[in-house]
Length: 480
Image (cartoon, rainbow, N blue to C red; front, side):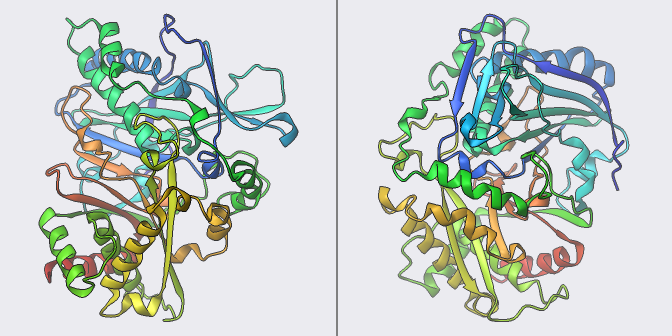
């Protein structure tokens, strides 16, 4: 089990965009699409790279300077990530915004870990969740805002690069969801990785590379394109006061405060092959020929959802057949907005799909096709036209607050944003982990390292439940 001193901090670096950056200040008001995420805990990801024979001296003298320089070059195109979330003391003082000013910086922690086995962390089998937490930086209140008003300034992104001597390194990412959705954060990480890879080639003009990499599709920050015709921004802001109590101490005003970490959980990865995904689709169509929506996403989520429901009994938990089980996911809707947003829009642009079914239905023989039909119907109804995207958005937060979160399966990540493709110059990652599912209770979906058609599913559960889930999950795939 990891301890708080599992890593040694070698350097605490504050990285700013280059002084030559064309833009020196930027303020982005939170849109109604950003506001629902205001009171959620940070999103945490970990990317682990195997670099055999990587010495401490080479890491410090050669790798870190390249990472810092390429990060600075990247930030000149992603200025909000070097800024802060500014929260007024009361509603009369304005609304929250992301604010960058000249001199703002991003925290980059350089650390070393010699107490945890790198090969253990990068395996797919069950591992203690607490062993990963020291590799993730914390988002902390910032003292960089000097506007003179009574505000709370919060970091929106923090990074941590940890050396595992003679084995490799990890890149830990912690971001406040209000600054951007999964696509936005992945765009930043992809740019940083590409720039770092180029910076390792000494004959490259690094400033020219920075301009070239984003010239075709620079991030778009135009908030005027998002029309809040239903007044959802103020509704979400008012609802957040109640919602925050689900995640942190009632007396806390720090929206980045982490809920209590459950150290009794283990995390495990499951890879579903392209072949098995196609078999799941055929089974769904055989059972439900008239499905209105069928995709790899729906069959994978349905398979995992029903396995999670079914494993409660074998793990020692009793659930009544009439108890309600919930499923929740988000969908990118940039192209479905009116007017449509460009694919490079930086921020949040997601809608929410929620479905529920009785426990007894999901644990029965028809549980899988019922789940496929339910999830598919939810996606179809939500995305069928512009009016349906946010028609019940005022119930999203109260809806979550009113259910038993132990009966909720939500989805984090997307195979569209494959972190296994992030190459900083030392090859593809050996392992990607969605760390924040330890506290959110979500399942994670992502691409596979070995094949573009395979999907990697990540879970964080108690050890008895993970053992039961593993048996049911594998048995059902083997029976296809």
